[in-house]
Length: 159
Image (cartoon, rainbow, N blue to C red; front, side):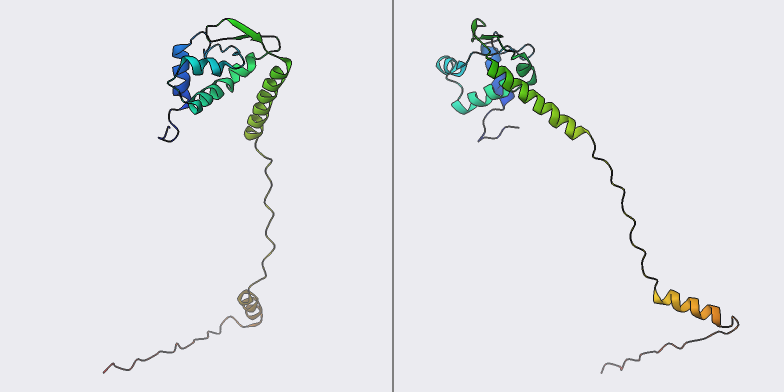
């Protein structure tokens, strides 16, 4: 969902880039992009702001498919799809670390924590009434009935 302050969503921005340069931006089979490709895009395309271009490239380069393709020595491509450098060992290690961190986080979110059995509440103190009834029923004869009178309150008539 885009707001006026954010502009276009990363998906819309990515569609814009893939429409202009399909050889470089292919979501189904992403290829490592040339280092500094944003400078070339800035020169050739004035439609995107700096923030929009940054968000589009971040969304593309953080895709799992893109990170999986960053192997050491793999060819990087420019906007026309031509080879423009290779992926360094450090870039490949960073990509693998990002993928591993995502996988670990996903696994930790999916594995449920062990259930802790609830502790039984402490035995409540017996109510005094129950103790009283237990004492009186054991000692008292069963044929005796006790009646109590209820007090009534009378209101004075309002004058």
